[in-house]
Length: 156
Image (cartoon, rainbow, N blue to C red):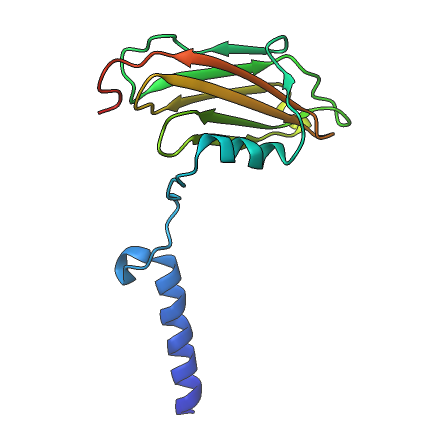
């Protein structure tokens, strides 16, 4: 009977440890660490050998050219593309060209989203391009970008 109690106790402690990272000081948490990767490498990884089409005709970018604060640069993207079950935007990714962590966000969509839209605040350390990539469920990739002038000192 002792062996069974020991196994139950060990299982209970392991479960508590996984559910409470602060108590046991391990690295599991909801927030992921930003991965530092050069822009060109990130872009090549996203494209996977495909060529991106010019998306400036279907993407509306609402990004300030010279934001007041580089720590919170609002990036709003609306993509004028069908969102039907057989033809829709499945992913929107926002990249920056000169940050340490160039991937700002990658957001997956479904036809149930109704519209391909994304609003996010991006932290920018210096003047650079913000690149928006949109992938369809059929593998077609659209690309649009805008230069953003960040004041000296950037996001601090």
